[in-house]
Length: 246
Image (cartoon, rainbow, N blue to C red; front, side):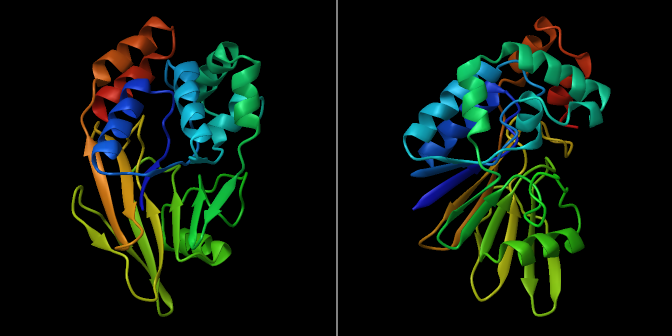
């Protein structure tokens, strides 16, 4: 089975559609969405409708911090741009969308795979995994052979071997064998708001049978997504991020 793992969609419909179409062409038969489905972007309702359709067909979804915020939490601790986007998003969501978000768990498992938005060791506190130390804590808490996470908006791969945790920077399109007795932590990057200087949408595809992982970067119609943000009256900074990838 090939599993497409998509994180940090952030209500970017154009990027989401591009990644889903590419994953289908790559033979994905299972889909997992790692939270922050809404927030920042201009299409929360359309994105949640598309994701609900995938959930009805067996996709796994977990909750992110922006999903929590859209339901009424966390907002006061956010920066101005995130806070304004959250207030706007709350006003767009109906009872159906809120119920869908509220039903999402913080983690999900499938055999020896674990899926989470941020650190497994403290779900709901949204620890960023930006170092080998944080990656090690996450893998120790999850006790899975392979953990997938999001939240940091740039692709990364960690593995535990012996007494150490090592970081590996993946190359888009290059297959990575996840073999041996190592534990792995894969961060596929952001579908809807990349922040690594590359504005192409990011996601990961895992082949269970071959234990092979691939990272992908996909150009999409980011200009249309940016225009929607401005038309909605959301902060201009959010539109610029889509253009610059930062």
